[in-house]
Length: 409
Image (cartoon, rainbow, N blue to C red; front, side, top):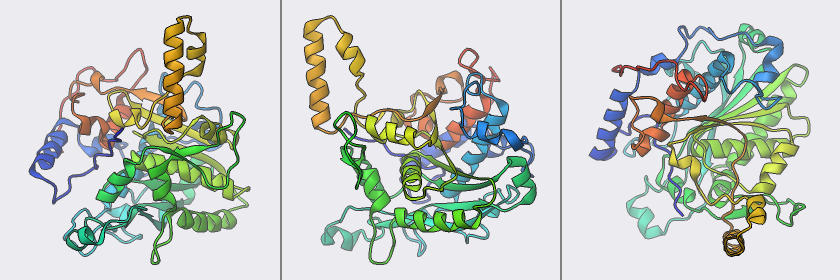
């Protein structure tokens, strides 16, 4: 089964004419990016203060999702802006000397991406390494396209005193982009489940398992580049030690592949650091990551995951299959029950039985006339997700504005 990877947030200057036209049509059909931000970027967000844990999911966002609480809405959008910055800072040009790295320095990135007044400072760039080894004959002719290590995101720490007061704590953000490079796409296609290293089997006889390609991206390294896992462990360990005597939160956020890596990182952080602060994942358009045992492990560790899903986005429906064992057992049709149980056993043996992880905020492109639900790329794009979040009201009243006008960027 194929895993459809992320459509990038901005057009690649060297992509095919088809992709360029698609991106152009997309930009024309969505409101301008500035409209997805608050009226002012000077920290014009709601004050959370003593309620911050509620918005970080301490109660699984109970009573905040349907209808969508406005304070939570702006927090989701704020984290989405940090994810978008990971796209905007990425050098997509394979002819460039800085291909697959950052266009900007750590000091200037947030300013270049319009987030200079958000009160954060980037402390670490994060790189991901693909575990797939390309044959030398292919690597010789397509060296840049077969780049194994590339910039995937960054770690940012809230350093502005006023913003810390508004948030009610010092917040650490780990932001990840989605799939961009050729080898990342290939890793996405390794959809079978694999055991997390060093973990014992669960009560059901099956230990925590995650998608093979995602785990490879998280743990692979080269002689010149540490793994994403090692980078995060090293930096987060220092940050926790430095701010251990004050209220602290760790928010991991990502789009598509980045959403999957955010979940793996959250699990690893809480496993490695017993004194870890409250850990929350804000996931945009994320694929399935692991099995039931893995989901239970995340819950036991107290990791809070808000999974934002566009019903028309195919990426959120892959990889693998979801099988409800309770429904199979309660089915009174003997022939259907036998067939269903056989199918479940077969997919389980193939390591393809996944579960959806986290509290879900379900949105839909079809509620907005300006969005084409048949356009796979548009339905998955990060800007689409932020547009949906900004306008969603509730499941009974999907959008704030029944008539949405297209605005040229």
